[in-house]
Length: 200
Image (cartoon, rainbow, N blue to C red; front, top):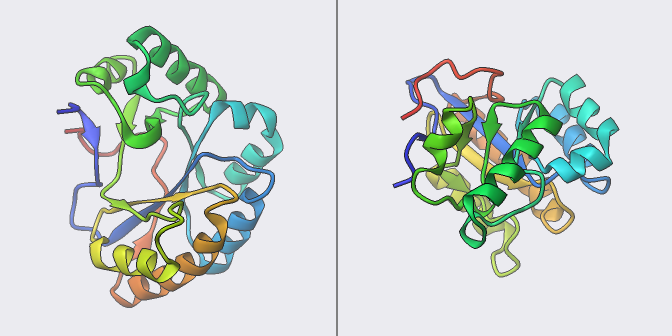
């Protein structure tokens, strides 16, 4: 329905792609960076442009640590609530501040045709195949871990959040999930600057 959207990375390599939405945050980003360094994970951060604009040193820290900074729009704008002009403007402003070809729509919401129109401008839309649920107050951290362990496979794109509400779950789940996946022979990668695969 959405068109040329990436849900997982094709191929047989046992790679997993952890992603973090909504940052950078002065409360959680540096904590997440330390956690990823400790667990030896490279990840992709889908940053809101307004946060990147407000906290440029945090964006620099993400890049210096070898993580990929990607675009989550300038503001956390719901595509279903605005017209194409407003949505497109939000995406472009986010790209200007993150410098990334990768874009993840807030809430994972798009209208049919939007991803194709963005791709014409060199913007690749990235969704996920594993939504951790780290932001949900009605789900325990054990349930989040169990869900991620059950659903993650080769090429999986896993969503976490770089925000205060999610941090207690992220802090607990990420190292345990990483240990479990490594025992299954998985490695962890950030999305590359350019897609080495066709977008379908």
